[in-house]
Amino acid sequence: MSYVVMNVVDVPPERAAEFEQRFATRAGKIKDNPGFEAFELLKPDGESTKYIAYTRWRSKADFEAWVSSPDFAAGHRQHANAGPVSTNSETWMFDVLEGEYS
Image (cartoon, rainbow, N blue to C red; front, side, top):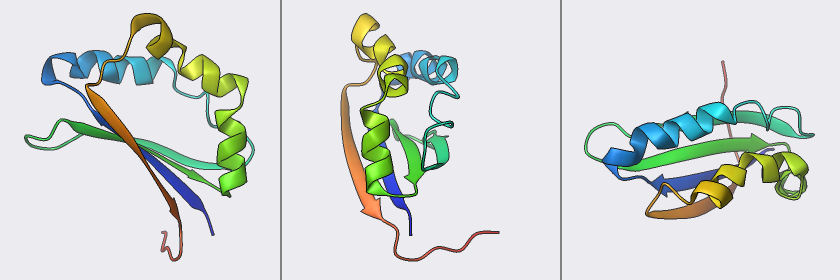
């Protein structure tokens, strides 16, 4: 089955709009990469400040190829140029064992 990568990003409330804007301006850079299946940016509900950038790939190798691609570098250039918006982040990686889809 698929491979899922979630970047859990802690964003201070006063920087949330900037964080969302950065994602909006790089939208679409991922979708044409081989093995890409899905992307979602999840906004926290309630008091949490943790956003989740969810991606699903055909395989771990496809994800790793994207991380090495020019599209990945271009999408993360804002972070390198303007500095991070987040105070902390971590990456969670999973092999999908089961799934149901409509």
